[in-house]
Length: 272
Length: 279
Image (cartoon, rainbow over all chains, first blue to last red; front, side, top):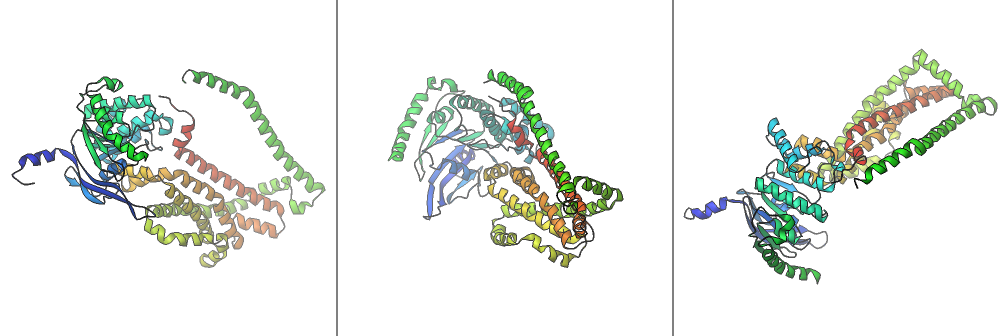
């Protein structure tokens, strides 16, 4: 903020999210409160693909909820495009663990849901819809209800529902968790392809280390509860990446090895 | 998977045309036989074993019904009862759903009023019918009041139950995507709880009719309930049965209409059973 540090200010403007020493505590029914997140700081520039890994139940999802403004922060602050997140942050897209398509709306209506609340002209809306539905390979299923779609299709629909209204940041909470290995790989591949085109910022929570490395520019490793940021690993792999042969890609082994080394200690704590 | 699909389709089709359809014919035939047998037994009993003065008979009931409709008397009574229901029932449904929704949305409202509503629900509401006569007179409005009361609570409790079951993640997602106010209510929350809402509506239909009849039993000069009570007072048992049958058809007709609306509104649920796409 000081006028003499012009460079720093400019760099700061490139950040879409600044998480500053954020703490989150929950009320427990019996013993006062439980600290889920402790002193989390994270800077996220525009267009970066960030994955967040950590032991299960460590509060990864909570961090996403805080950025989305779905739960109040206990301490610290989160700046989103320079503004503090204090209420619901309608400038993010959210892809939950389960697809959570609205079962009473058709696929098309689901994908259009975010468009309808924003100022899109009818032509733009149609174009956007068509484009994203085609991108996800769901053309021809526009009038289907979610219950008629397979798990993979629902997942694709859930992702393009968040992408369609073009929020600058997409928060993804273990979106591929419950899928089988093949479907997951196909979807990872599709996600990367879509992302190559749009280059929105993505925060992607996962418990799968391979997935974390394969997708990310940076991997954030979180500790066991209370969760802190243990380390942030750069993944210098080239893009576009080939998900199906990610192991052969230059830089994968090295990044994965480093991640595993850090993560191993966290697992040990969990098994005691 | 895809290779298996046609064969299973064919076996099902084969079963449909042969075994299943034969079975269905039998079921329908048996049903007709049971109902027909019952009426036949009734007719015979009224002629041989029990005084027709007490139990009437199918033939007398049919004759009474035709006479009643011909003279226009029965139609007038039906019309009055239908009016009472047509005002009291929708009012009870809308207010019940509205309040159930409001309680679900506002913790404060729910915390203050929930025990009160539960206590009020403990009152046998038909017992309030005489009070309504005192307050609203013997015209249709006292019956509208009873119909409303019976309808309201059922719709309120079902909607409120739906609101408590509501998956908050749907609401959060919709709000993140910018939905607020009316859009959030009518596009997200009400559809999400609509199975509960429709259960409330459909269970309240017979109660709406009960409300009108009880009101008319207590004090009235018109209406099917009045018609039944009057007929019983004059020992015209055939007319009593005519009234009961008319009420039965009233309930069935209302339920069919509600079912039709429900099926359209809950299309997304019904369709899910038919086809699932692999891939």
